[in-house]
Image 1 (cartoon, rainbow, N blue to C red):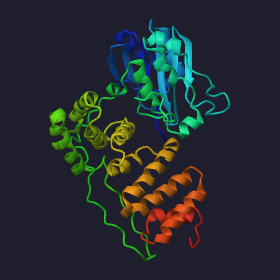
Image 2 (cartoon, helix red, strand yellow):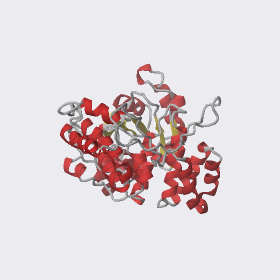
Image 3 (cartoon, rainbow, N blue to C red):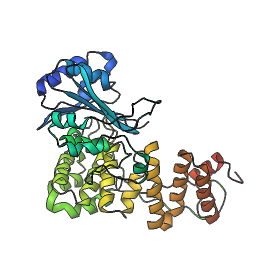
Image 4 (cartoon, rainbow, N blue to C red):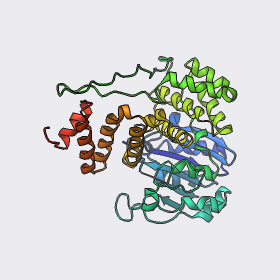
Length: 390
């Protein structure tokens, strides 16, 4: 299952009244709201809240909330990590809606229409020319070319996390809405993801397949994180101290502040992504989208970073990510030739999941011809695709 996420924005809203309205809406069990799992932040333009996972708000919640408030209400959402959109209501009446991927469910659902840039510019006090590039449904050519709506964006057209860039254009910083959830008291010491490097599988022999290696990466390697931490002692000394002491939760807001002040320091994204990963699973809210965004930003700064490429590929395994996975694995084959066969098997899986079994078989045939590895993943996919001899 991909990412399902909803954020409510209340431009010019009164925080107390907005919180009270959401509390009343939570009395309806059909909404699936869990107030303790919602995360609020008061921005200069008004309050905002990230709803708990599995909530069922969307248009119904937006209309219900806006009926009791003077301010407009926008429900920004990501659906299954495949597309993003919003519902905008005021006084219980729908004003505007948008979906980046029309006809997702069936023709006309969601409808193929642009968002209302002049209306949003007025309600959010944002430049219309800044908002307009986001408010047109995705074009396949733009998606294929990995283009951005605006140069400063982090997510390309076709990436559902373009929602966060759009949210920023409205004047609401998504990162500030995602404070780390506290770890359970019964388990105060976060799990340690680091492990010794895997031994390279022996060449030859077609006996019992070997276990597939798990390569260390920028999200899982404590030594790598500590090494990169040395680069940012001048701008994030306190955060580095927390990471060294394995206190990842208090390090996160400090790293977020350091990134805001120094967005071009790659090591900061390494440390924040590593902290997110160490806290993953300790609360109900997955931080994999945050890890993905940090690794993407890191690769914009360091495009040949092997540890970052390894980390980004498996972070979010949804249909909209497989094309990017293929590109990352192809680059890893070039940068890390010693492990190229392992990357090529992983690439074969992505081609298979995208429905391109011909290319997947070509990848598998190349690996088999090399005869260097004999792993569980390799044999499984060879059988799945009916490769000769399997």
